[in-house]
Length: 382
Image (tube, rainbow, N blue to C red; front, top):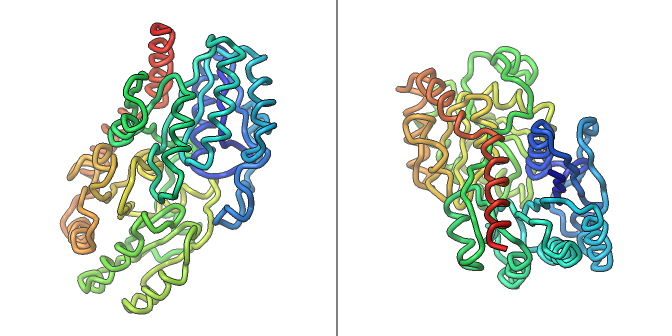
């Protein structure tokens, strides 16, 4: 098959780029001809909340990536749609995560369908269909995108249900987010401690990833202020770039008297360093207030680290409670109680044994099978 993936990839950084690149490798390993078409401009700088959109890592030598798409130039959308259509791909795969991208990606998809006379099947893998942070016009923009797609893969049941708000007829499948196995092999805790220059006599919980309001870092700080933690050798690591006001978290740290208790790495963590943060941690904490699915969960599975997740969106579907970790309500006391239980009562190895079993469910082969199966359904109903 000739497959073109449209979306974020190198030189851009982040979870969506990591997903598209890993998916491309899986299809390539299966013998398909694969190309990623990424952006020349992804977000205008005034709309981007972080320090930079670009990776400082080396370019992946094993992938064919073309920079071509300008997210806010309609003339470009028509031109790129024609260029892709001229290649006559069997499948075009579009990762969708934000209504802002709907005019660009929806127009390119329409152009491809028109010029290939429907011979190219256009599949969207959905991070979200309803965004975490809602804005006026989101629904209309998303509807425009949905109308251009032949079939959908949702990575959580909640997102699959949300698709029905926009389309009840087109084929759609649930296929969970695969394990992120592209951040290197698991290393010893001792090696990670040495790299991060951390105290080997402490135990660590990790909050990892871009920091936004819906991810509930404030809930975790309040939970960690529980006096029970002061009697334990347990530190909280927060590693990730702030995509909202950092001062509110530092003020909360002061108010809760947590100075010297939290280890901050307030920056984007390069792919090559992710393993150190996960391998130094005893448990990964995702205290989200809302969610669909999370790539952080799938990094934790790869490094076989127990997790605490909140019972929102699809997180509880992926982390079996009391087996791979804890599923609790997004409440500071519930979070604190579970973490105290982990550090005082639980045999970490029992969680690890279960994690090794559970992560077998989340292979990239299962995701490529889902894309192939959905494409077959789309062909059959034409």
